[in-house]
Amino acid sequence: MLSDVSKKERKHMNFVPIDQLKEGMRLDRDVYLYDYKTCKVAMLRSGQVLTSAYIQKLCELQVLGAYIHSDDDQEEQSAHRLPRPRPPIKRALKQEAVTNLEHVFEMFDKNAQSINISHINQTLDVSKQLVTALKNNKNIELSIFNLKLYDDYTYNHSLGVSILAIAIGISMGMKTKDLYDLGLCALLHDIGKMSIPIEIIAKPAKLTPEEFEIVKLHPYKGAEFFLKHQLVSKKICAGILTHHEKFDGSGYPSGLKGDSIPLFGRIIAVADVYDALTSVRPYRKPSSPTEVLEYIMGGSGTAFDVEVVEAFLRKVSPYPVGSCVRLSNGEIAIVVAQNVRHPLRPQIRLLSEPDKILDLYNDRNYLSLVIENACNISTEDLDEELEEDQEQEEKIVE
Image (tube, rainbow, N blue to C red; front, top):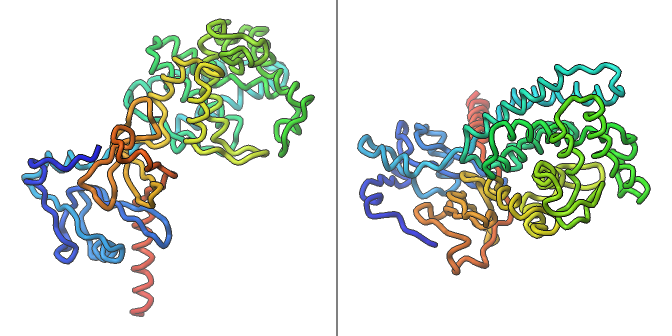
């Protein structure tokens, strides 16, 4: 739905044309700058004090003007400031998770010659911290941008699956203790792949039927290892064993169907597919988050549990609020709100018409308008560019 700014908001707006902007003025609203030459999006955040360099950049990009802060405008300033996407999990915690996973996977690789239960306990502690972080950010929208931080696929994938699985569990209303176990199960779900020859795991081509049969053993190998040495609960082992089962019975290793697949297995199945298909692999390029979401939604009720998919869609978005997107008509927009169950059709604000909001799902006038891809927004890039311009000017003066 296309909604104009309210009369109350108009009354307090202080829009200043570009030729009247002065140094020292403070922005009342975020300003997004799209450079058609470089196809980059930068932004000046609400509260930013304008400098001559910033004003010059606004002129170069043909910005008509900006909303400037006034002392009696506090509420309106807050209303127009777009949410700033924040990573739900701190980098230090991710690094801690990766380090602990390395120890556990090494234990498996050495055929349990040096079992150390402390590594399992430390990994469980990581799971608890992940649960706490995600529960403290109940409205967080997970996206590919805050899942992919490390190059090593094995550990990064396990971490990504754990974050996604916990988010799904929270969305389904699981108890905290169960969330701890679910997070640990997801962190350990692929440990059985350590038993597969590296030439198969890293093969830069499609696997042969014989090779795929070997890969299909990894859920069993992982569950067997933990059961044999009594390192985790049977519930966690069951989740590891069944994370490749499909809701219609076409999965492996046992061809389980429907609710006969343990809940942990059903949840991790969705999280595993999303993270795997959006990751770079030796044999293929990553699929876009949009493509993978469409794949998962298409598999709801067949490959995946309907309830799990719905919980997943409530927590995972290809276009989180505050993200920048390019539309099929060439326009650039900012996502301002989500439409539940329709993550590919959010509500957006056009950079060219910041006072209007387009509802891509509920307004029939925009059914043909689609989001083509996401754009990276960077305040740092703009500052670096301005610094480079200043350095060039100084050289010319010299």
